[in-house]
Image (tube, rainbow, N blue to C red; front, top):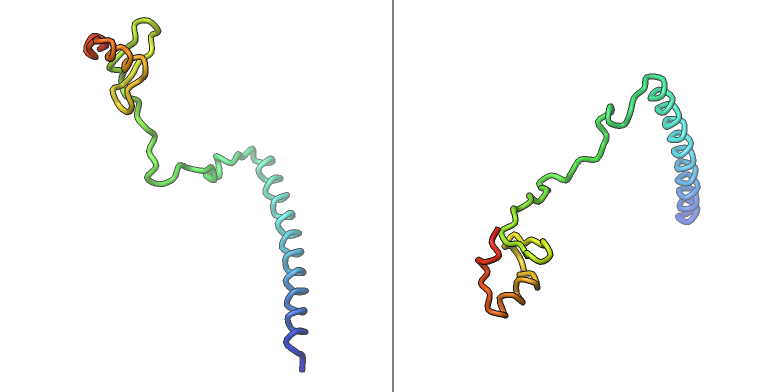
Amino acid sequence: MATYSELLKQIEALTRQAEDLRHAEIEKVIAEIREKMEKYGLTVADLGLEKSPKRGAKKAAKVAAKYRNPATGETWSGRGRTPKWLADAEAKGQKRESFAV
């Protein structure tokens, strides 16, 4: 009867052998797929295997500009942190409404 360590060595050897065979089979399958794709003029898009966006992930919608810096043409949507050019203008006493688009 085999010992535990002998069985572990056999498992390791068989695992390596199985991985080697798996890699060889994968290479063969890939070659066959490429050959058939070329033969029939197929692309990855035809197979429907292109990566799609994650479920629930939405592209942020662009928001129209509400304020414009007349000197530089920079705009701000009114969302997020107030831009420096507008904060500086307000600090000088100008009203935000005077920059409205």
